[in-house]
Length: 281
Image (cartoon, rainbow, N blue to C red; front, side, top):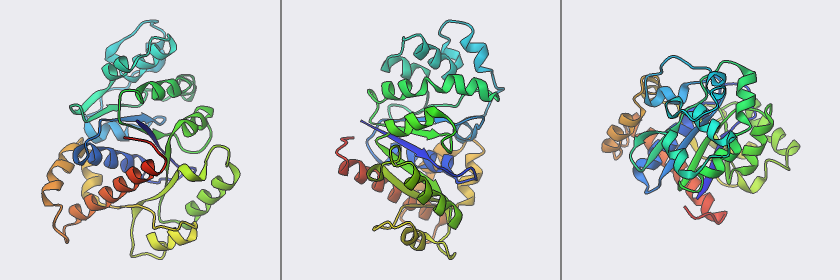
């Protein structure tokens, strides 16, 4: 059982949500793990759109004010259970949406545009994640960027492995080093895994150079930019994309096959690091 948090200190676009979604989806298909993918970001339905057509948003306040469990309300209803001390691993499962039966479940983000509502609800995420960890092999958590929210710090501390996302950008690499230096109590070096998103090895700041710049001994994983994947991620097509692409993964010149190989490499890096940290998954 392991909790893997995806996070970045940068306020800029890092490709974090598409990276965690691609890795969790691929791992659920190619590896024998039961996975829960949690969206803990604010006012961002990117993850949900990867798998489903998004419906009208519903205020979290409307749900929490009911004072009862509402299975149709998804994450909002689950957080009501947490707040009422009625949370169990079985209840977590009841509120998720299934992508692949017994392989990949998704807990979509809160349906609110209000920072105040998000802050009030976010406090319960730590208990939610710890409970989910009891019934899944891996719990992937897409976290809100920076350390603005106190609960983000708690989720980072609770995570067994933290994947820090940044793009092929010197400034974001410098931000990573700064965060690591100034937040050693939260961002412990041994459980951090830097990873490039939207990578392009034809630029100056390629994977090899970024790896050297941030002082890593081994080359960090990198998820390349892929226009086909970006398109299907906005059209609820991620699950079918990975099922289809795996049939052509032996093609060395196919861009989708190369993308899948890069995602598999990232999966292997995560599995190996968890093994090194003595977490059995």
